[in-house]
Image 1: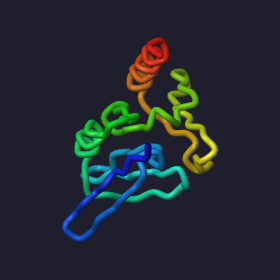
Image 2: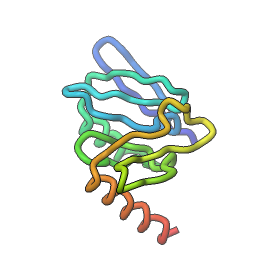
Image 3: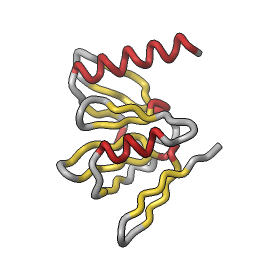
Image 4: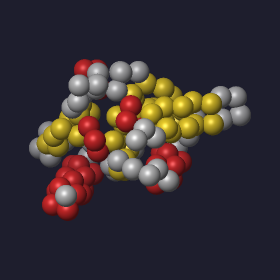
Length: 121
């Protein structure tokens, strides 16, 4: 089932399929949304606004990673604590957004969450 994420401002309506969002990172009072096709979009919302809206989704695959990042768990390929990198995978994920860095503590927490999730399935 395809779910749509809607962002509504006083001058704009943006609709994006949730399975096209790879991650969203903080940029001060703004956020940068990265899509599977390699495009990104600067939005005038802080991460906590996205986090609250993601909680309302029927199939929420998004998780907060530290203070400045929300990722779509569906695309996580590897977490390397030594290099502090998070790599994404998937045929639809553009090469330009295949990896990023995050704090060791945030990545450790994500790794632990994904381990538990796997054991439950």
